[in-house]
Length: 460
Image 1: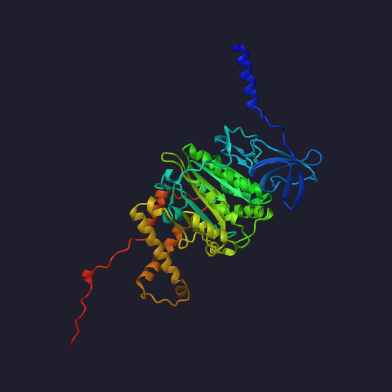
Image 2: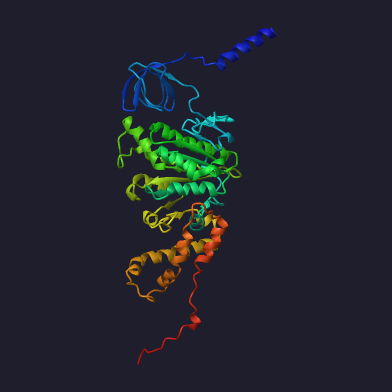
């Protein structure tokens, strides 16, 4: 009796461990642009499938929408050899991606497949692409500073562990170089870099020239160049965040650099418009502005005693327009923004950080009182000089007209040198603060004891 019961239990176990459903498949009925329509195969949004083309070719796709009995698919790979009525077969465990310390020093695509030619990944775990949502009340507050190795940022826009910042820049003003410097000079335990929608040439140059062997050793790079499908670009951004979440859950201090948030938004726009979502703000459908906070809010601090994700998202300001819809939306959901100035870049001032337009919203919580006050004083003096710059350049300003402007003229040379930094020059947080305290003296209140008395001439 016991042997019979054991045999029955074994059969039941085998039944439940195997897929009891027969293999379902649908057929391809329509293809317009990158949008594919399938019938006869019930799938949910986010499921992945393969479409059998002519010969041995197959196309991998993901469900992005549906209408009645029609399912809308978007390809993850190049569309080749498809024909009407092609077979569509769902994939199981579609959203599992590799994570683990084995990813350090590797370059992968949006599916977690290696691109660097260093052999297959032997990752210790495979997890869902969508991470667990952390209750905002369970997150640790931002109270500790993060050293990013950039003097201007460390001193004037101090970054906190778990902060999310935007790096707003037009094309060609040095944002990629600045990101590379951060990867090499930061004191974070691990750096995760997402290159989303960039040119293939820039991807290779960033990894070999800007990141270098030193930066790559403790980094993971997820690359999805501009010729990838929009769905692959979206997945690459999500994979970048998921890898960072994994290391944060291991108690690590993670620096996440994503270049760029704008390309992520543009990929979502391509998908949304293809499945029929109406455009709203300057051609961007509403789903784009819903996707941005869903991605950004996954970063930040974990639970108390755990790790953190300090994130920098580059935002492309087309035509240097700071009121671009994506730039405006990103500014509202991030904890600060660093603006790169084309004028400074054209003057040879690197990094071309516009200190007047940049701010870190958590700086008061992660800095000492004297440091914060001196940073404010630096910005005041720098801004005063910029206001009078045109008058000074044409010789219309008369020395002695304004004491604050005279003070700014005296110190602007040292301030300009302080803000510049070489590509191979590291500026630790402590050194940056000490240099800030030395470059601009503290504001001194006037000595009223030496003020001459005013004669009383009233009533005469």
